[in-house]
Amino acid sequence: MPPPGSPILIDGSHGEGGGALLRTALVMSCLTQQPAQVDGIRGGTKYPGLDLEDLLLMRALAKSCQADTTGDEIGATSVNFSPTRRPRNLTEDLDLLETPNCGRSPNVQVVLSSLLPVLAQTGAYSHVCLSGETYASRSLSFDYFQEVTIPAMRKLGLYAFPDQDAAGFGRESRGHVTMDVEPSSLEAIDWSSRGKMVECHAVVTTAELPAEVANRAVAHIGKLAENSKLPIEIENNPVDSRSPGAFVTAWAVFEQGIGGATAMGRRGVAVETLAQSAFEGMLEWVAGDATVDPYLGDQLIIPACLAEGETVFRTSRLTQRLLTCIWVIKQFLPIHITVRGSMDHPGGVTIKR
Image (cartoon, rainbow, N blue to C red; front, side):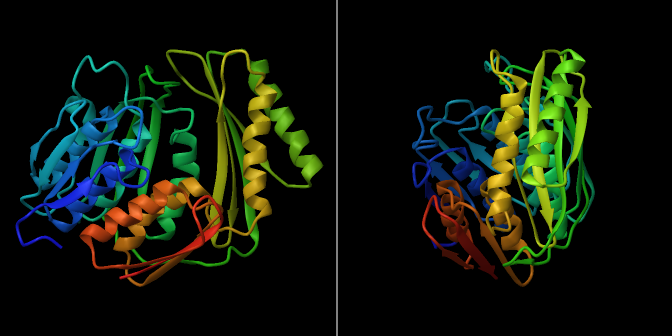
C-alpha cells in the first residue's frame, strides 16, 4: 500500500488491460475512499484511452463521493480520482454527464452495473437513468442484465430494479433505461455446487421487424429444447426502438446458481441461427457443473468482496477480465481471494473478508 494520502498507482495495461480494469479501480477508489491514479488506460486494447462508458462512470462516481478528478475526457490515457467523502445516493439523469459529439452512444448496462455496488452502499435510495445502447454484440445487454445479473445480485442482498423505456440496438442507438437501487446489506453466498435446475427461459426481443421473424425464432428454440429434453419457457418480447433489431437471451436458474448466453442479430443472418447460438451457449453452460457463467462471474466479484462472510462460486471459464479485476481489487483491500483453475478453463473463486 502507498503512504497515506498518496494515490494507489494502477497500470491500465495490466492483464486484460481494458475498460473493466479502469472501472474496477474507480469503483474501488470510491468505495474505500482511497485516491487512485490509472496510467496507460485501455493499454491492452486496440483503442487506448478513456472511453465513453468510462467517462460517464467516472463522473457519476465523482458526484457520489465528491471526488477531485483529472483526465476526465474522452481519449485520456491517465486519470486521477480522489474521493473527499463517502459515497452518497444519486438521483440523476446520467445523460447530463455526457460529453456531446463523442461519436457513439454508451452501453447503458456497462455503466449501470458498475454503479450498482456503490449505490447499494450509500444507505439511501438511488434513481438513475441513461440513454444509449441496450442490446450489443459481445457486451452486456438489457435482457441478460435484468434476468441474470439482477437476480444473482439479489442473492447477495443487493436490490436493484432496472426498467427499459426504449431499446437501442448497436453503438449509435439511443435506448433508455431507468434503475432504482435500494440501500442494501450484502451477504455472502455459497455457490460451490448448484443443486437442481429450478427453471429455464429464453426471450426473443425484436424491434421494427415483421412478427413472423420473432415467431420463427421462438419456434426454433422450442424445437431445440424439445430435442434436448430441456423444459423451457420462451417469451416473445417486441420493444420500441428507433431502429430495427433482434436479440436472443437464454438462461437457466439453479438452486444455487444462474447462467446463460446471448446472441445479437445481424443483417443477412437468419433468425434461426441467432436463436440456435444463444440456446447452444446456454446449453453448454447447463451441461457442465459451474454455478455462474463467465460474464456473471466478472460482475459478482466486487459485490462479493463487500459482503460479510465467505463467498464461493464456480465459473465455467476463468476469464482474463475476472483475473484482472481481482488484481485491481487487491490493490485497494487486504482481502483473501483464492482462484482455483487456469485462465480460459473452468475454475472456482473464494472470497473472504
